[in-house]
Image (cartoon, rainbow, N blue to C red; front, side, top):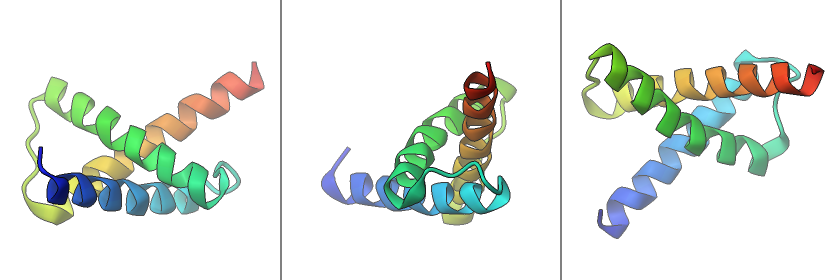
Length: 83
């Protein structure tokens, strides 16, 4: 992975975290926290989509996949916080 790919990955994760924070009202962690959740959500989304055999193409597909992963992660975090 070169530096440009890493920058794009972080940017997609940051955008996905912001979108997921807006989807899951009240479940966000602020700007920096949402970026971290978005990056981890991008990894989780890639894993889940890979298990399902779904491939995403292009930038929009990567953003959607990362956002879905971040929403899943925020949901799991909210369950753990309640317990």
